[in-house]
Length: 327
Image (cartoon, rainbow, N blue to C red; front, side, top):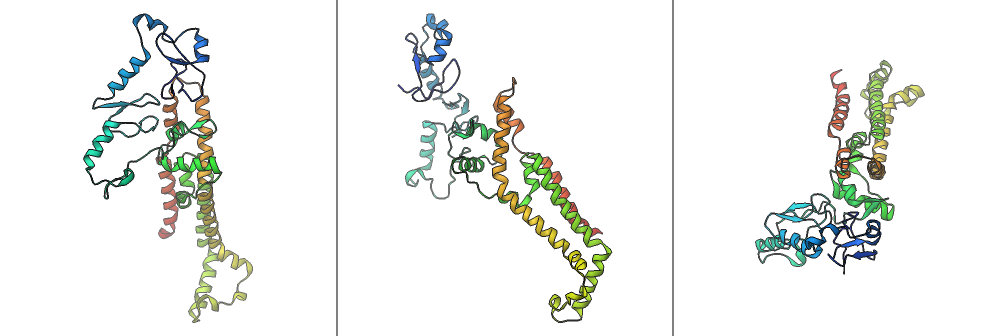
């Protein structure tokens, strides 16, 4: 008999295939052999006199799910509203035949083959991106735990993390390219976020400082006057009239801009892999902590995103970019 849909009542762990399972001869409750032997008796021994039956109890629970309000997740036993397709706790797809049949009746006979919705209707959103919540997506970390910690944009990151684990290959993160350090701060990677933000802001400030120096303004005036006297713009400028120091000073803002662009490109290339390592490390630390607060709750509290911090740094970026217009 397949017990993989049940949990051992002793250790509360999901049964897996080919595990050594003992079934109580009196009530029919499946338990891990090691758990059964550690107790020395059935977990429900005190209920045997009451005529307790594991099969009848589970059948009753299944019948309770046939009402019009709730459905119990077979993985984590969370009671979910009937209208949900996926468990709100672990993200496992819910086998809700009544709900599905109702939807099929509402769709009528105009649905497309292979379960594809009719033209103009939306697709069901899968928060786990089709990945089993119990699948290990990092070292001793399941996809369900990772989704709890990630919070925002879970489907994208689960697919990327699975790709990193399976093929050691990531994807380019254009959000990190556009926002560089702000993106890392948004994802609560404070160390690298503060480092990159400080570096980019320093380059911006240095660029504006150079542009405001008298020496730079003098060189700029020389170039402008030379261009006004010629028909061919910068190509007509006699480079020999400027010293190497003057040329370097005049091109410093361009050099700083190139450095900022390089930083952005690198951020986009390493963001997903860095976030994968960050999530893995933080989840391991959370799971190793001794606390009365449930693990899932702590994952949600310490994970997710930091919108306020990212907005503050973003405002600083914008302010620095617009300061020259008011000077």
